[in-house]
Image (cartoon, rainbow over all chains, first blue to last red):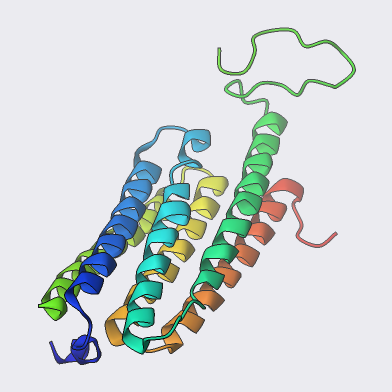
Length: 130
Length: 93
């Protein structure tokens, strides 16, 4: 275990806190990816990996921040850059991807997705989710 | 004591993230359609970013933080470009 020699000064409470956030973050990432590989349709699958980008990234970033802050005895918060970056970019990428998939399904006339409703005519037919 | 707790939880986190990356790679090879493969690539990027942060805690070095920041940015750009390609058939019009 000599690779962990830099952590020999870490108090037990900090080790427990870091371990808690690590286990929560990585476990939720694994659960999200299991959902991603098991859910039946693309529009359901696109929800699952966001578990890894919200709580997964948050937990591991928090663990890293606590670990380096306690070890250095000064605030080390540059990991929060990754948290902010992932939080900002994930909705953008997933919205773009979902719009692209919807565009492709509509162009093929796939019966599983609703046709586009033009904004000036009143909505008719079943609402989304029925 | 604290080393033992940390070693166990770090190993657990690494195993979890490795299994998650394997599942994402499985979905990327299985498809069935192009958007599934792009989403699987995005998941793979996020998981490898998290795995590098766990490596950073395990070794106590700063360099892994920078590597994971670079991977996160590359993943964002790659997924946006691929989604644009799926939508339009070309990346830059």
